[in-house]
Length: 512
Image (spheres, rainbow, N blue to C red):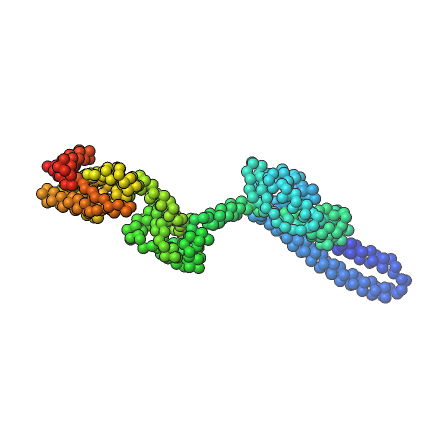
């Protein structure tokens, strides 16, 4: 389509024609030749002026085309930019919106126009928006703010608002006069300079939901990292990258000591290669492991710890880091050991009690059945303990029982079990004596005689010298053919036979 000349150019051409007509009318009654020369000169000037005007008109047309192209580019940029753009009036009414903003709010653009922007603000962010909007209008301060926005479908997302305050002079831009006089000075940013200006707030709306979620996760991770447990982070090669404050407080190693080293820094050396092979096998297969380990702290003390290790993967499944956490379980282990003592050991002598002894007896029977070696059960009964306990008191009697426990332990072999069943009743379990019954009996008798000799030694108890003797009944067994109760009954029969002979002797019951 052919472009129309600019209004100013048309006016100037019309003005030139009028001048030419007036010059013709005013022609003086001079000579014909002189008049003709003057007319020809005037026509020449007018022709040159007309050519200049035509050239200016072409330039103006080219400028207009460039402006239209720039406007089309701006419109395309505004509509299809990945950023949501909105324009608000002074009261917060939406007057302009690009397609992205409508899509972000999940509403048709025609329905978005003339709506109050505040209707899309989540209730918990309403105060933030009103304060921000008020400061923007009053102070012209362009600052960002983060809000929760709800869509028309009820879903909520986090948005970052960046606002720019502008004012536009209200006037008709379609008249020739205003086209000639309109300049960029009519658009003032940040300050209101004209009492007849209309405020406009240009706004960009950016969805930052994912960034907020990551921020929250990082905040939670930071809180977890600064827990009361020692936490270390290593790379895929197990080189320490970071430790928390609790690590330094628990182990004594500073962050400078740890970073760049491996967890071998605080290894106790108590665990063998098989232990670590098993641990890493589970980490590699299940991405986690937990269990009890011994760590050596900076003061050189080995401390029991409960360790948890987790593998961290990238999106492609590659291990990028390992996270380890541990805490000192010394107190718990002491409590467990105390419970173990109360459950399985005699509180007076610290010897195994009846419960633990029966468990070990079951194991001895299984072992005898497997390796074909004889085992023996000894029942030990004091010949005159009641007399000592009654005459010297229970405190002295307790001291005597403790001393007896010590003498019994040094009289048997390593690996044999000495237990107190209650009162002055002690038992001894002898395992793996020999596969030959005669040899096994001889070994059992020798140990029994050592016990009798040890008990016959005088006891020095609270300033009192006491003497005591014992009667011992021994039951030998080879295979798991009898129950523990039957074996104890056989040893009991042998022990009563020893007491019947006057005591201070042993008798053997042999199970063939």
